[in-house]
Structures are given as C-alpha cells and as structure tokens.
Image 1: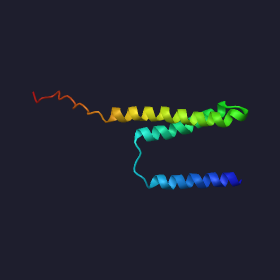
Image 2: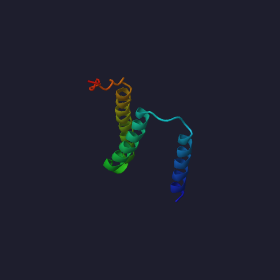
Image 3: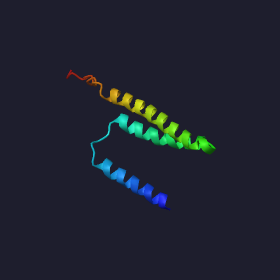
Image 4: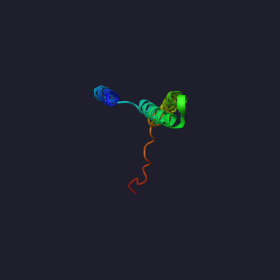
Length: 91
C-alpha cells in the first residue's frame, strides 16, 4: 500500500510540474511515450531476475525509437508548404 501511495504522489507531482512547462514537441512526446511502452513491453518479456533488466532495456530502446519517430515528424511538419494551385482565374 505504501508503494502505491508513493507512486501516485510521484505521478501527481510529475503531472503538476509538466502542466507548468512549455509545450512539448513531437520528439519529446515520442520519447516519453516510447519509454513507457518500451518499459511495459520489457516488463512483460522479462522473466525471473532478468525482469528488471528487461524493463530498463525496454525503456531505453523505446525512448530512443520514440524520440527518433517524433523528431522525424517535427522535421516533416516544419517544411514549408506549397501554396494551393489557383484553378479558376476568372474566365
């Protein structure tokens, strides 16, 4: 029970501090999402004493992959957009 209370308190503190910051770009969002999903996947795949190591490795790999995907999205969305063609010239 004590662990649950500490975990919820830590989560609430992190949410409060995140709400006060500047908006995150896609690379940061992807890195955080990848870390969570990678940690969950690593925890599910690990067995016995290696479960902790699998969780840590999954978190690191997920963070890197998610950050790279988010950075690619940032580069794509920052490209200049072509103006829409003007088909009807008043004829």
